Length: 184
Image 1 (tube, helix red, strand yellow):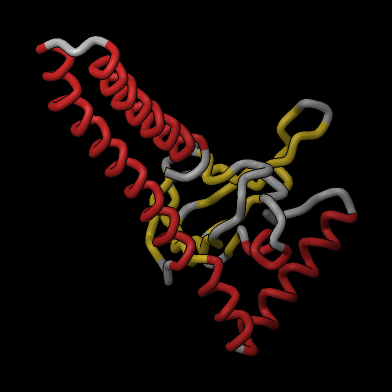
Image 2 (cartoon, helix red, strand yellow):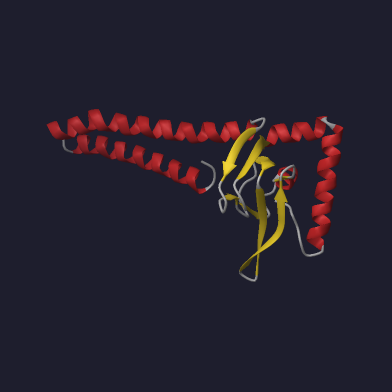
């Protein structure tokens, strides 16, 4: 429910509320038995459905942002996140491979392939910037997802984690300066 799917669900929830409002207005303008039935029975159901959809999207986003390792599976070819998406988590690859993709001259260029034991998505968390690349599953991939707050707390609390992340970031930045990168 992140990215476009979450946005579309929230837009749909708003349209449901608007439909409930229109039913109520129709009852006020033309008070009939039919408009009373629609306003009294359908409008509350539409509003409740909108509340459930909105709450579901918001709860998913909250849980993802504050999670301490949620396992997610991605099929080969599935986009994990796109260039420019907001950054709310980092990914640790448990199995499979992912491709880090950038667009150069209107063509997709795979700038890195990451596999089991590697991680991605941390650079955007450290800089509070949107994602700087697209990441796509190359094979069926299982990744442990850690929320932004927990990731930053881990990096700040555990010296070896901080050193590992900073070394990885430095390597990725130097590769990026040389024309290739494996960041996100």
